[in-house]
Length: 335
Image 1: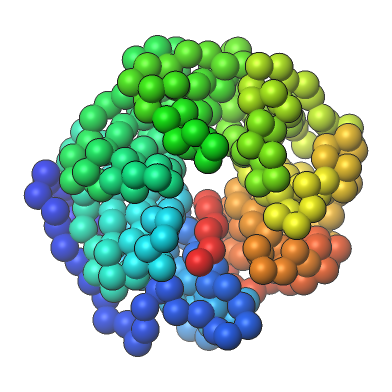
Image 2 (image 1 turned 180 degrees about the vertical axis):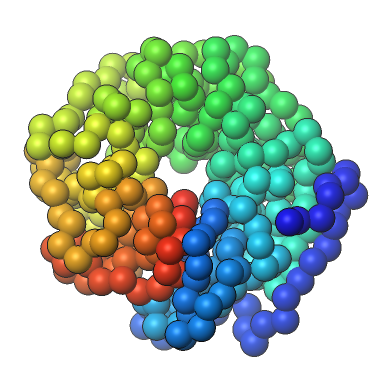
């Protein structure tokens, strides 16, 4: 169990050979966030450690960062920090490292728990937003203090928050009651669309800032091409309608991947007009994390609930298990 929380930052560290942002010459560094596990196995040894792991060689070796047991939901790297500044959204609050993962502090108090996502204003990196099971919180001093920002939200279970990259004053969040939008840095929220639908994840297209995708509980995937004013379903070919993860190919706007509950991974090559199952090699079909390597679109990572991390090097045609056996993998990011 993690130590009790307090408003004062609690420091912890783990001796490491190199920083979490280190990478091999050929590959980006993958950050994998794990919530829990039945039993890890790394290099043939049992290892009950959970939390943040990294690999710079596509899963041939893994490095753990932080406390040995941290129920973790997502990781976010501060833009332009070179991987030095990392935030973790955890069950016991928001944790932050300013030295590439070698040491950490808890930046939140008892009132912030079950933190699910962190997003950072790309212009003013001192402005940080946290999505939690109890609503949105904002820090304007790099995590030093946090303020609840739920005015206007009909539901405060918020699994995802995103800052619009074309206008940092605009923030979007996913809720149990639809997609909400704030035009004033989370001071107030208004319903944007998909009223009454349980939204599990939202994604702003990496190719067009006005195109948004939403993954829902039981109702599949929706897309908006006008910044959320209108939405339509794009479910042709999907057999599982609960969507936990969405990822877009950074080199091809037509290619997206969807991670589903009990249905595995689906892929579209026509921006959602049709989907095809691509589960060859997967041993678990509950998918909570997907990431396309920004340096190589053929490389896709898949995080399962209870089955660890899988890798495809042929754009989802085949999957290979690469580590963190029996872990619940909730999120990926790369540096």
